Length: 391
Image (cartoon, rainbow, N blue to C red; front, side):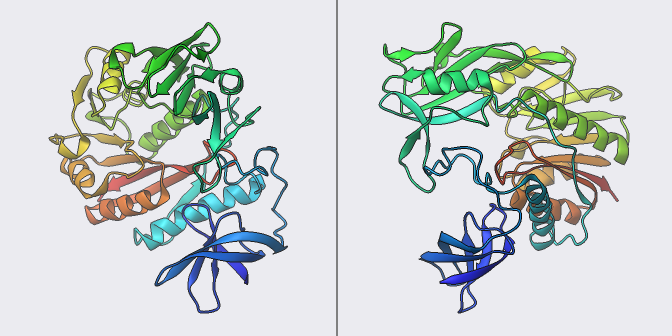
């Protein structure tokens, strides 16, 4: 059938309506377009459809710059969207989630400045016949690649030229500003792994084979273990640090105790702590906790515990950077129990942000600032820094 695309869903898919009124989610379709689709899944209130042809194209549709998109690579879902529309759609996705899920109308959503990056410094790839590649869209099939325009050159070299033996998956990580490089293989490596001499080879299944790399962010050097999370580029991390610091200063200033919840390697506890009386970093992942204890000054308390089970204490500010699922009710309850006058929430999923924002408002907070960052060009992924004031 041919349908008109009316909007965009949280996951970046076009939203249309079937003749029976059922909502259709159409990957690859853009608002304002008329597209021919094939229904692939039908539910009571919605369905999914595959894009067959664009009948009337948006003026913001462009030819994907990456040659692998046409071959079915599923790594980047918005390479057919120009930058102007991509920025506008991210803002719409976040604003819609805040209103529809969080019940917040007219939220102060705005775009952060563009980030100039040399490319992603962490890439997860599948392995087939020893070579790395990406899954095809909505498939388990692996497309091996001879280039990757979104990867940092130090990553791309390993991705294209490396050979990874019997592994099923490889994570390639680099310190763009230090030159450190590693690959993390799953399952364990074997003798057929071939990578440049400077690349450390790590088995995901063997903690004893763990390795670390270093990256320069916010004017200082950080240790990052193979299993620890880090933002997709040092430029992205710099931008997040700047946004979190600006949010604190704009909403309430710096005093009392800073609590960095889901602290990871200690990025925010170690970069926006000036002016606070003391700092507590809360993190559940053992590798990240070990990194934080190296990265942070000796006076910072690093507590290894899930934030949902952490025992709250009074705070002047809480910075929370939870996984994709967000804080949820247990996390918001812990945050609210600190009595912090300002909460800065870093979200990588619009739906989770909408839910968390609604819960924080229900706990007595007011959304004061919401900035949307593009850390993954060519994709519909969003990163949002939101600031809430108590009362």
